[in-house]
Amino acid sequence: MKSNQLKLTFCGGVGQVTGANFLLENDSVKILIDCGLLQGVATANAFNSASFVYNPADVHMLFVTHAHLDHVGRIAKLVRDGFRGVIYSTPNTKDLAKLIMEDALSIMKREMARDGREPMYDIADIEQAQRLWKTIPYHTATEIPGGLSVYFKDAGHILGSAIIEFSYGKKKIVFTGDLGNSPTPLLRDTEVITDADYLVMESVYGDRNHEPVGERKEKLERIINESASRGGTLVIPAFSIERTQVILYEINSLVEAGKVPSVPVFVDSPLAIKVTDIYKTATEHFKAEVQKEISDGDDIFNFPKLQFTINRESSEAIDRVPNPKIILAGAGMSNGGRITHHEMRYLPDPKSTILFVGYQSAGTLGREIQSGVKNITIQGSKIKVRATIDTIYGYSSHKDSDHLVEFVSTTKDRVQKVFVVMGETKSALFLVQRLRDYLGVNAVHPELNESVILDF
Ligand SMILES: [Zn+2]
Image 1 (spheres, rainbow, N blue to C red):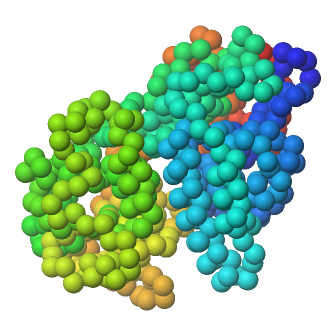
Image 2: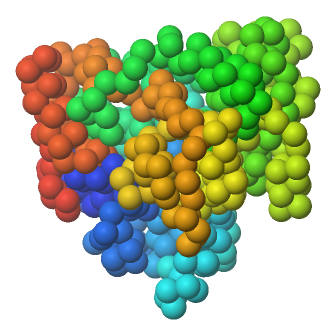
Image 3: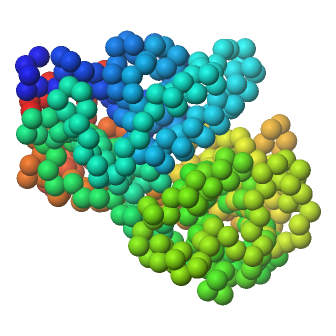
């Protein structure tokens, strides 16, 4: 390779939303961007437990865009397989990733024990990863080996999420990670990019638009009021990072404005409770209006009748609290976790409501409930669905198709090539076509394990 070139290999996250893993290298360094778990497809176990297509011992650095499992879930395996380089991310991503990796390990151990398989890493590998992990704040240009420098911009997707820019010679390659559905209730808007020469971007919603974000809070208000006036329980399956905190913030503001009655609200997820504690310490990354509310004295993750139920006994006691009440619990797609217990209890109750506030992938219990079936089997029990089932799409944490195009538009005059990845093939190809048609940029959807030589 010439000294003004970098090689980019797409080792994961191609034709799939999940499993992000990209290798950027020249003759002196090998750099990974994200090392995520493949999820929700039949080939996931085989892909996740297979050897990496590069030798982890040869990799010098791993940069992590954000702490979702599909971006961090194979880091501990990378370490187990010999990686001893440096891991870099924002400080919040480091802390959140530790929680996510530990949680994933405990779930994996249960599943593997059931299936008679060996976990692909252990707690010692997570601890070793944490020892190799260094942090770089947003907006801090940092020289790294190999003649490159790196810069993190706020992606506005979850707390700590970064767009990662690598400069080499006079050019830049930018990795979006996941891009937030700005404006979001809590976080700053996704930062604009204007000078990317190469762009590796997500496409989860490359072929779809969301309902307008302006309607989401009014819809939540209406659903809380209807549930309370029926004397029912409102059950909200919620992802532990970002969605739980966003919904708590919204409920806090609705209660304080007197727009909904003050009813008991339970956050029933040990992981979400720990994540919320990290959010409480990172308020400097929230948007200006939220920071103002906090400095004016509003404790945004705390209001009367809010309870965090960390242990199993207090979780089980929620059943005995009279209606109306609200329960937020994980897992976000109802594929395990405490939410299943609440769904078994409240799905048959015509006064209660199950409210989805996040994407439910095909094959999950959440998707089945969301589709409106009247009979469902959960953990071997046949359950009649009599509760109201509702969905608010506006709380998605990903940009939709129009906003992905808008994101690229600010760098369209400079960008030489856009690699559209981290979406299902259909979604990625649709976005490729839109970027070509609307912006006239050279957009492509690479193949898994394809390598390209880029001139810098
Ligand atoms: Zn994400």
